[in-house]
Length: 263
Image 1 (spheres, rainbow, N blue to C red):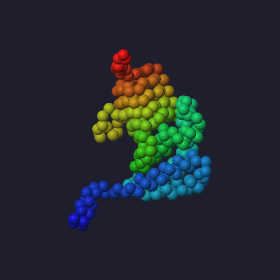
Image 2 (cartoon, rainbow, N blue to C red):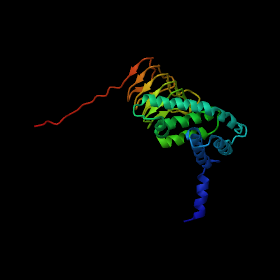
Image 3 (cartoon, one colour):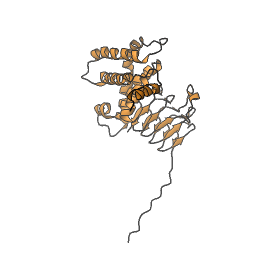
Image 4 (cartoon, rainbow, N blue to C red):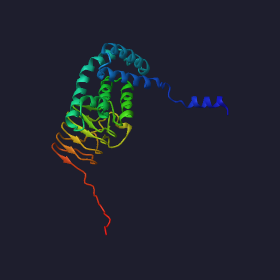
C-alpha cells in the first residue's frame, strides 16, 4: 500500500475549496442553546443571550465567506425578533393543545411533540433565511429534520397557529406559503411538480390558505396550486391543481376483503 499516493489522491478528489464541518457542528450547538433559552425555565436568559452572541459570531466567521455580504451586524437585528418568534411558537403550542385530544398539558407539547420542535426550529431559522445568512438556516432545519422526520425548508412562509400532528414524513418546500390555522398530518408533502435548476427563482410549491386541514400522506404539488380556505384534503389525495374555498377532496381506494369460509 502506497499511503502517500492514497493521501494525494484523496486530497485531489476533495473538490470543495472550503468545506468546514465545524460549521455544521457549531450550528447544532447554537440551535440547542437557542431552543433552551426560549423554553427551559432553568436556563438564564441574560447569560445565554451573551453565549448565543458568541456562538453566532463564530458562525459568521465560518459561514460568511463573501466579504461583499457582511453578516457581522445581523445578530442585533435577529435577537430583536426573538420575542415575536416566541409569541408565534406559543400560538403553535396552543393550537396543538386545542386540536389534539391526546395532548394532556402544555409541558407535554413543548417537550415531547416532534411537530412542535420542527416548527420551532423552522421559525428560528426562517428569520436568518430572510436576511440571506448563508447555509446556517438550512443546517438548523436539517438538524430538526434528522431528529423529527419533518423536513421544512427555512424559506417556506408559515402563518400563525400551525399544527403538525404525528409529524413523521412531512415535507414542506422552499416556496410553499401556508396561512393561519392550518393542520397537517404525517406524511404530507407540499412539493414541486418537478425538479429543474432553472426554476430556482420561481415559486414551485403550493399555497395553503387559512383554516385548511390536510390529512395523512396527501401530496399537493406546484407553485400555482392554491388550496382555498376552510378546505379539507383527505388522506392519500394527490393534487396538482387548485381547490376552491370550502372544498373537501378525498381519495377513494378500492378495498376488497375476502374472508375464509367457515364450516
